[in-house]
Length: 287
Image 1 (cartoon, rainbow, N blue to C red):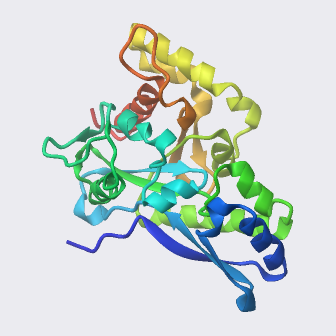
Image 2 (image 1 turned 90 degrees about the vertical axis):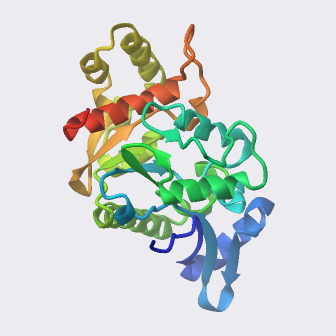
């Protein structure tokens, strides 16, 4: 068995003449300071980030699919796993309520009762692909720099256009390289901004998507007509700007993950993901 890549890793960003401004902003936020280490002589910072890249060679028959997020939350980085901060943990419950992902019967992880070991155990489970699914999950952040909100990330860098442009350019190149290296042909994103950045979609096309997806889910559960579902949500699918071989799907935002469908046990978030995964399997000839 090949060595597993860690979930949390350290990276470096050269700041040049902008070093003092960025570092002072980081120091003003106590939640960030422990994740960033400044190197004044080299005018750079080192920081911790997170990603989950399983070993595809150990699961050659599974379909690699990338869940792409905006940027890491500092609390999840400190805990060692995506979406492990308390208000985000139910993401994992919603994921494993899917028709396409199931825990193994002898699993060590209780998603309804987290303790200090849960992030590590769950992270290893995802890294090793130890769950029942035709898919192999990858997790990646478009911007690897941790902040509580994307708005906080922009406060650090948007006022410095050359640096922000470089961060975005590097992010696109890294994403393109990752999908090519791991032969990932499908990406699921959870924010309109990331969808726009990697596909070139117009903001007006996906405005109000939460309500549109919710309506489509309700209609689908009534008639089970997948064609009508995707006809109404055609704006939620596009090709990646960096490769015509990569399909990008826009799902519900993670903040809506716990919204329950009226008079049903299912959640909108899970059904929306299932509809994407169903379309993926059908697009490659699987049932």
